[in-house]
Length: 395
Image (cartoon, rainbow, N blue to C red):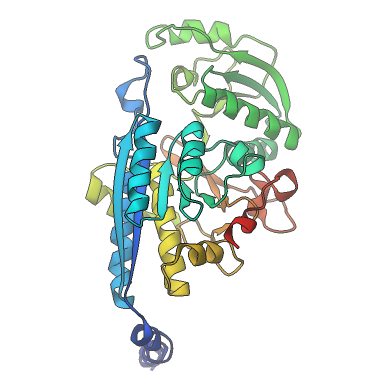
């Protein structure tokens, strides 16, 4: 009897809720595009640490396939074009061409300078969705109009790690940083997080050597990390020039966190909880590799847009943007809780998995860190620290 009742309930749900939506649904097409700035790598970076050439683009394609599978019942169709280049000039030219073709929603994985150029050159009503740039300035002071941020900021990453260190009472930090622009931005975020969560910076060292560590890591790094007592080594090496060699090679036997060792990213192939294994398997079957954090960000961006179109039944960019920034929007994303946007700066709130090479360690925000609005807002730039008022650009 219980089974019959369950089937009857499902039938009634379809008849009274879903069927009217299907009957009233009108055909809609959403045209999207994705721009990727091709990264350059130093010769010392091993091939196995270099990302796939289609990173980000593959994630967007997966989301398009997922969305079209469900969207066909509502007569919704989603299209995607992609382009990658090293030159900002080429990226801007392609974006302008897409704008002429009435594509006014673009996913972008580009450097800070390129992001500014794109925003300046494109029409004000073109929506940019950042899936790769973590620069804090776009969430605090250089607030780009009509721009959403799926990618977690540097501060979201460093706050997640700092919360875990605080909980585990690893209070003394040795910070080792590289010299690239991204290293410096990440390092600044680390220092802010140390202050925010009352952790002690014992010493900071800058890596400025050209040594190939693959043969002499033990000797070189033990001498380099010989400083006062510390609980953990925090590494800032976005270029992957030395950080991968720090674990097990420090003067004191200590944990390594940051860009290497224990890391805080939006996604990792080790995540399987909350149904994530299904997404991982779909992606692997299609692209024969694991899903990266940028793939996941691109997938999230497309899914956020398609979810908004499903709810508001329109493909008008301004209405989609307004809905995504409203309190009514939420997105299920295989993370155990619904995601939403910070209305003041367009940053997507999301938990940050802390992972090592073979397993998920935990997920931030860590239990015990509270916020009056949302515990997710303990990660990254909170409203009082931001000059942004993004809602004004969507009026």
